[in-house]
Length: 339
Image (cartoon, rainbow, N blue to C red; front, side, top):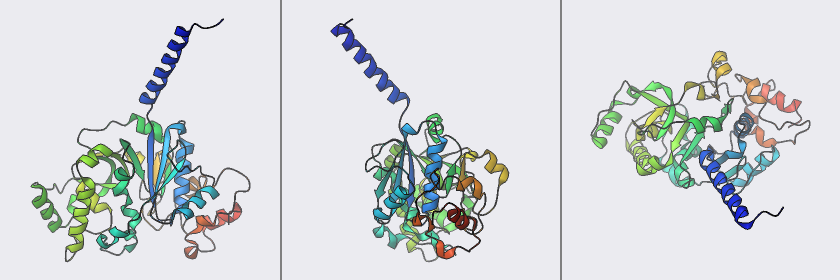
């Protein structure tokens, strides 16, 4: 029978309302990385694990902020068969180029680990500027791995009214900042810093874009970087984490610890890895793509596409000059005909 026109219009309206309601109830979720091309293997494995661990990849948008020529990263993603798109699409990677050369004069790292001075470490400060039309996102370092559904986690997350960020508690507290740093904070904000309060680990965090913008967090970070640069002895050790910790002091809430099982680049943590939902190889000595990796088996299964003869992807060996012949990672790539 022919459906009357009025009934047909009603059915179309009902369908449209249902679709709109579905989009409202099931919002897009955004995952953000930053890279300078050095940790390609980590980036590829983390993205692949995020896609593999969710049942709702059709709502996951992946963004990579790239501080180096885009062509090299694009070719690496193609080689490792990760889907890419010039505009944000679900279950695809969108590359956002960012030139941070103007920021380099402000970068100062005090201490032995000068590797923290690379500009890509500071790219996370620009996420709300690069993605201005979204409300929240999740930033993760490249040396991470998902073992649980990130879309469901973000769907279920409840923001506290004061929080610009949500991050895991770090192993240091506010007393780690030098007295002159805390004095400078008091002069700027007319408030004393509580030295017993913990700091957060900025390698994994959720971000409220509206509050970040309203509170001028990027400008505040720049102010602290400039003060650190001009200070005779420096205001802190390490690199990009301290200015963000200062800019967002008292403006963050805690992530569940299983969503940032960190320090895996320094020590093996079998019990935590077994129950962890996001693994984080913070530290340098035990990176999965190095000579003495921790928890290599958990990580390696996400590096290459699941097929018999993947392409040879030299981009996965940006650190080949540092690898020994008995490196598990090197042996893994050779066994899979990938180099």
